[in-house]
Length: 145
Ligand SMILES: [Zn+2]
Image (cartoon, rainbow, N blue to C red; front, side, top):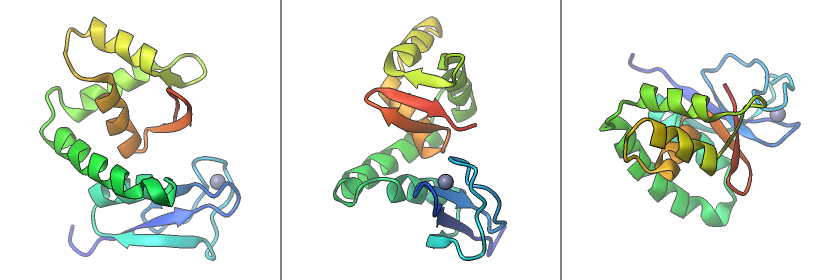
């Protein structure tokens, strides 16, 4: 679809950025209503770029260069991934506990049960890039969808 654009919006309530197709709704993180006066961080032309820009916008400035490099290599991983990205997304969901929390340990356990040699950290950074997971602590993430 040519000419389609996405925006990265910063929620005024929780200050976390998320991607939007321009239909302002609710913040996926805190539920605050995103109004017309929302702060638009950037505008991008593809969903891939959107995922990267959201992740970067949610990262402290001094870490952004490192993250950008990491995300670029993760995108390559997602695009050439075997198993495919949707399978990996399913594994992330399977690794979550009843509160929707994921840890390196739970992801490692899931991966081991699938008999694959994918790196748990790669799987988690893919999920972060895709906006599936939000880091909530050291080696702890929460499912966003
Ligand atoms: Zn919010």
